[in-house]
Length: 461
Image 1 (cartoon, rainbow, N blue to C red):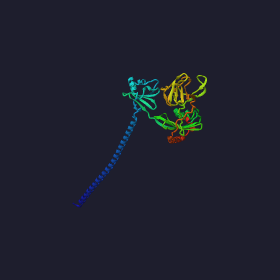
Image 2: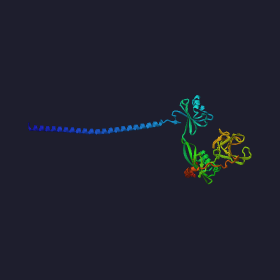
Image 3: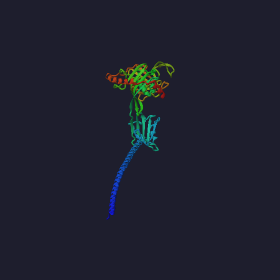
Image 4: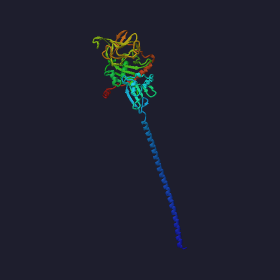
């Protein structure tokens, strides 16, 4: 082999070696590239998968939240409607008032209830409520099945604001008396008299019952028929409520009254004998008798030795006090006693006379009717209803003629001096003093309405 051939062979071998090296390098590069690409792909995949899972989790959480919201909305939508403790969804509810001379049978017959069922219901209710005592103008509610006959499931009768009677008309024919919860709310009131106490209290948004209770407290200290314009008052009292609605007045706890420039205080305190009111020294403001035989009203004629009689048309003595009041207004006994007379006479009409003790007697004339159970020999308590205002006998309009005897002689009932009830007992003086001081501080903190407030109230009304 010559030199040229050797050179050519060496070159070929060198090229072969280079080729092999190049191939190895290419393979290494490719492997590295593939590895890098794999790692990148893995990273991208991990990121994508992570994002996907996150979105899936977010979607799941969102769906869960939406489902919870839907469940909440569904729960709110499907809360059952309750009435008198019964579910009334899909039931027909009818509210009405008892008509004059209407009875239970007449009402229930109109709602597909048989006479046999009504009779059994009346028997079942005897221990709970006498169905004969259903009164006109009282509210009742019928809960009926939604059929074409409007068949009654239950009847609810409301004899008063604090209770209701459920007549269940299903197979059990059960009768229930439910007492409503009565809440007591303390109120404060302050005002100035322009026309009368009744008008002032009414203008402040309080009831006529509060006026009556107020008058009873100070009846023997103040002549409420001769008040002065500018007299002022403050009260702390209890208001009775049922389901947020006012149904009456509880105790008056304290009163301040400014009359003719004089200050009068009254404090409620119970020393074991029931409700009583005392002045600052612990003297009772009550007397053995109520001053007025009916709730606060108007005096139409006073006791007089010479008065022109509106019916007989002549001048004669009037030995009583006339209180004008609407027909049917309850008349109350001013004190404990025994009924002497309860009858009708030509001049007195329906009247009642009561002997209270060996010294005092009272008489009540021209009643529209005498109360049930009031007959000669019957015992009556102070404040008990003995009859109702009317115009029977020698009377022109509805009023009560009230007469008062002391030792057999007729006297002016509004001027008679009577012994007071017992003062605070010695053993109760400390307790009374603590109550008095607390209530006086509260009274003194109550502000009288300003003139601007009165004007604003007048505009708003």
